[in-house]
Structures are given as structure tokens and as C-alpha cells.
Length: 472
Image (cartoon, rainbow, N blue to C red; front, side, top):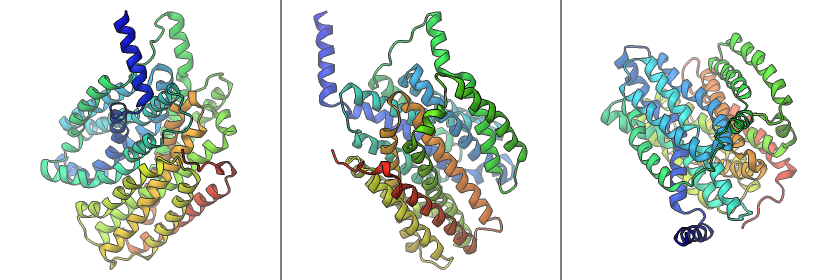
């Protein structure tokens, strides 16, 4: 008994001295990076997949959309399940799904199997960020930490946005050296390592009540009808958005017809999956979601729109285009941690809006005759945008979200980011409908200037952001 008590006391002392040791944060960082890196990793594999499966390149677009769709729905769902069932349990379950998706994709012989693999990867990787935020918030409360753990949030930010930029070059190297199947198989060694370290280092969840009353209580808190209604209506909305400029009115109608009764259901529940009343009353959180969506629209437009333009207008290979955008991810990673460690909100968000405007103006000045260094400079500006928006909005999310709803709120944060990403793809398909020309790129820049102005107004006119820039 004394030995057990001694070990418990030693653990408590260690928790107080180093609440966010590398053993705690490493699995969370890796788990949070799996979704963004998988979202962009597939880009260089689409043409080889089409060639080996004897299908059109356009048909492989489903491999991109399936992960987006699964992620947009699964992020807040995973967050809710983490709040109710335990963040560690859901985190480990997500890692297992990614492992399964890597196996299915690596062994896949047709487009249906590869699409299933991408959906599994999308659902599994969606657990990383919301579960990490739940565990970080819980650890901060256990140690009596009042301020956001800025250094840890900076690591999560690097794992999130910065890793998306390295997906295309990593994918290009993998596919070029070992074949397109490694765009899926690479998940196997990564998930095995993450699974082992998470089981060893992440703290156990509280025990669940396995009795009948406990099961009913858990089922009531999960709100399965609300989750299903949200999933179907959001899926239909995403399908509609991804089909533009060719509008799928049936998908939009399905989104409205299923979404409306879901809203009524959620408003009547005492413990809803999507707490609409709290969101409406929590202006800072709602504005954080909107800023994130608009800014990621700009960042992903650079990642994907400019990549298309470089390949079409400059005749660059996918690997070369990806390497030119690599500095964007590097700058984002270098700036994220020092900014996050100061727990800044308003300053980074203003910097995000201003650099987005500058970068968008830079896009409007580029032509097919521009030197590569000019393209790199524009990507560097958006690297600053990426770092500052992720840090500012992520810290704002941590401060604005109710502690007991941080999982769902974090999931919705990522969902709004995906809506921005999907919208960027829609805008790109519209402006490049006649080919990725200079005219289309300049139209893209004009849209981003408008989005940047909206982000700037959302920031400078938000009185609730005043006084949030305090170093700890």
C-alpha cells in the first residue's frame, strides 16, 4: 500500500513540475498531424493511380473529396465522443482506423477500395485534434494552469497547418521512389508508432459506468440522432459545394430538409450534440470559426490553386511545384511556437489579415513569366498568414470554448476550416474552368483580397479581442 501511495505521489509531483512533458505531447502532435498531411499527401498519387487502374484522372477526385467529407463530419463527432467516452479511448480508436485505412488503400485493386480507405483515414485522423485539445485542457485544469499552455498549442498548430504544406513534396518523393501505394502504406508505420507511444504515455480515461443506467446516461449525452442529422445534412452540403459550379440542387435540398428538423431537435434537447443556443450566445467562438474558414480559404488556395497554375502556366512538375511551396510550411512552423508561447490572440489575427491581403495582392501581380523567386516570396507571405491565423484562432478557441465542450468545439473548428478548404477548391474550379491561366490566377487573387478584408474587419471590430494579448 505504501509503495502504491509513493508511486502516486511521485506521479503527482512529476505532473506538477512538468505537466506537458514530451512523453505526453509527442503522441498528440503526431495524431494531430495525420489529418492535414493525409489531405495533401494524395495529390501527387492521383495521376499514377488513374494510369494503373485505367480510369480518368478526373475520376480520382473522389479520393480527395471522400477524405474532406469524412473529416468535416467526423471532427466534431470525435470531439463529442471524447468528451463523453474519454479522449484517450477515442484517440486510440482513431489511430486504429487510420492503420486500417492504410492497409485497405495499400492493398486496394480498384477505385472503390481506395475510396473506402480514404474515408477510413479521414474518420480516423479526425480524432487527433479534438482529442488532443480535450487532454490538454484536462491536464491544464489538473495542474491549476489559468493561462493557455501556449507552447503546447504552438506544437499542435505546427502539427496542424504547417504539415499540410509538406504533403505534396513528401508525396512526390514517396510516389516517385516507391509507387502510389505508399501514399496509403506510409500510414502503417506512423500509426503503429503512435499507437504504442499513446498507449504507454497518455493518461488513462476515467472508468465508464458499465451498468444499464450508466449506458443510458452515456447514450443520452452522445445524442446519436443529433450526430446522424448533422452528419447527413453536412455531407449533403459538402457534396453540393464540391459539385460547383455545376449545382447539385438535390444535395442542397437534402441538406436543408434534413438540417431543419435536426436544428429543431437540437434546440429541444438539454444536452445537444450541436449546442446552437450556446454558439449563438458565444460571439467570440462563432467569429473564431468564421475567421478560420476565411483564412484557410486563402491558405489552401495557395497550396492547390497556385500548384495547378505553376504546372499549367510554367510547365513545372508536381514535385517542383510542391518544393516551391515548401517554404510556406517552413515559415509557418518556425513562427508558430514562439508566437503561441506568448498566448497572443489579437496581434497575430491582425497580422494574419494584413499578410493575407499582401499575399493576395502578390498573386494578382504574378504572371507565367514571373521568376520562381517571386512565387516563393508570395508563398512566404502566406506562410506568415498560416502561422498567425492558426495560433490566434486556436488560442481564441481555447479561451472561448466552454471547458466541458472543448472537444466538440475543437471539432467544429476543424470542420469550418474544411469548409474554407472546400470553398477554395470550388473557387479554383470556377476561375480555372478554361485552364489554369494568368487571368484565372488574378481572379483568384481578387477573391482572396475580399476574403482578407472580411478577416481584417472581423478582427479589428471585435471588441472581445481587446486585452487578450497578454504574455504569461
